[in-house]
Image 1 (cartoon, rainbow, N blue to C red):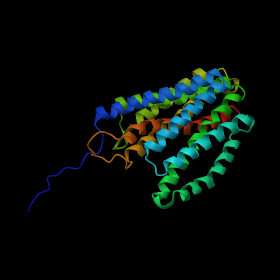
Image 2 (cartoon, one colour):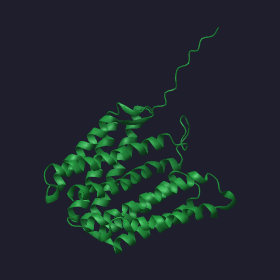
Image 3 (cartoon, rainbow, N blue to C red):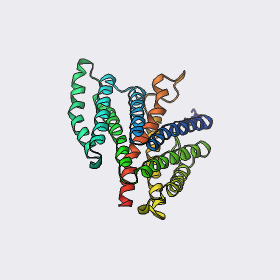
Image 4 (cartoon, rainbow, N blue to C red):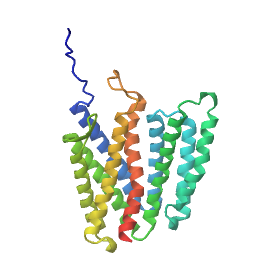
Length: 289
C-alpha cells in the first residue's frame, strides 16, 4: 500500500503579485478615465479627440492582447466601426444611440465576410468572430459619451458620469490590492469588499458632482452614482475573471510574459470603461427623466 501525500495545487496568485496587478489596473483606469473626463470638460471636440485616442488604444490592445485570429482584418473593421459611430453621433446628436445601432447593423455582414476572406488559414472562427464582435460593441459604445455631452446639462453630466466610473473602479482596485476577500473565485484576486467600496465611492462622487442638476437633486444623484459604479465594478470583475482563465497565459508557465499578455491589462481597463458608458447614459437619463 502506498499513501497519497500530494496536496491540491493552489492556483490563486501570490498576494504581492495580485496586489501589484490591482495597482496597475487602478493607474490605467485613472489615466483612461481622466483623459475622457478632461476631454469632456474641454467641450464636444475635446471629448471626440479623447474618445478617438481611447478607441485606437482599445482596438490595438484588445486585438493583439487577446491574440485573436484575423487581427489585420479585425483592425480594419474596428477602424470603420469607430469612425462610423463617431461620425454618425456627431451628425445626429439628438437621436441617442440609434445611429450606433445602424453602424452595428452594417458591421454584421462585414464580420462574416472578414471570416470568409481569411481563406485557407481560417482557424478558430468562432473565437475570432466573438472577440471582434465584442470589440466593435465597445468601440461604438464610447460614442454615446458625445450624446451625453451634447444634451441638456451635458457639461455636468458627461464629466460626472466619467468621474463616477473612474473613481469607483480605482477605489475597487485599491481595495482588492489590500483585502481581496471573500473572493468571487479562488483564482481571481477580486473580492466583495472592493465592490461595496466602489459603489459607495461612486455614490459619493455622484452626489458631489450631480447635485447641481435639478432633476438629480438629493438622493437621486447618489443613487445614479452608486448604480453606475456598480455596473462598472461588475464589468471589471468579469474582465479579471476572463483574463485569469484565458488560455493565453496558462497557470505555471515559466519565463517572461509575452507582449500579448502585457497588453491584456490595458485591454481589460479600456473594455470596462467603454462598456460602462451605455449604462451610465441610460441610468442618467432614466433617473433624471
